Length: 410
Image (cartoon, rainbow, N blue to C red; front, side, top):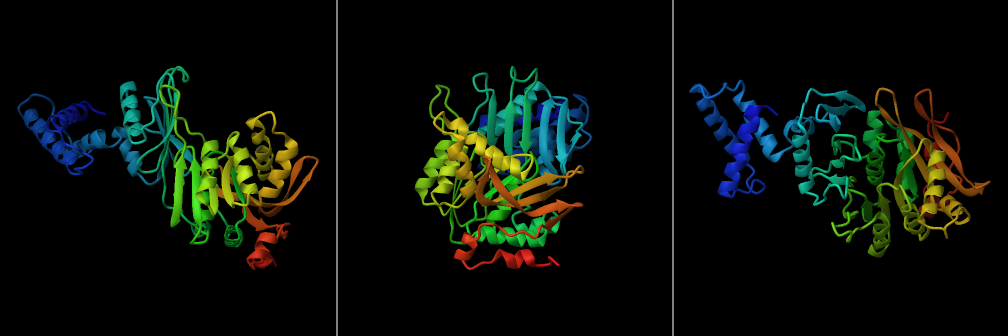
């Protein structure tokens, strides 16, 4: 932020406080005040009080961003090609476009970084301080904010903002982007329609949340859907929808609401489908119990392959307590999870479906059997010729996956 912008922004803030203006209620007040203060600044510059402004309109825009937006970061929020923003240090501000990171010329101060974070957290009511040096929060536009502060970090606040993108809302759009073939999309659409339990796996930034949004576009119109997440990220186009997120403990250490609690509460809300944004720890046990009770569901998990995803889902529930062991968890995973959709990323940042596998319901030597339905060969997602080993859910609604999987097989 330049000195003129900083000076004018402070004058605007002073006027707002003095006149008691609610900038949230009056959408034009910030711009009006900025234009007036820029004009006054320019008039004083003509009198020789300070240097003239090179771009009055641009300065006013920067002042508005500093007052109501995210200051020097606002242009990146406004740029649809930017999908992620992160700050390693005040002089190390990065953005990602199409999965590729780049260092920006933006230079901040430690104070500006803290002020930006505080402004971002105002909407969520969450906090970050020495007693709670990590925070996850949703921004008003749906973007996800993650912050870590010293002394967990070495010297500076580490800020990561994953922008919310509404552009991809269906499997058809993924087909158009080349992330998925039409044949695979039709198979997944059919699987969602019959109520298959789907595990979406992949590394960070491979588009797992986007895939959940796209999959749910194929759900029945009348389904009542309940979603639970650490912080709000999902943006489902569903008529009957309840979305819940976790809550941090208060300064007194009370009031925390965990993902495990949310999954249990979701089952009391008559869901036709349960969507868990991501499983990382013991909440995976509660998810399996929910799926085992007959509620169709989906969730995401970090993993390197589809088989690794199942192995991880068999391991995480063991964190729930000593009375939980593999003899219960592994068969439950085998019986509950129907499909694994594994995502990958190219070196140039392109995201794609790398594999779609179906479980057989059986285990061999403590490992859940997985039958590949689609695999990626020579950069193309192709059918293996195999059919889902379990056809009961498809048969129950009169749909035959063999028709879709046989298409173009020759």
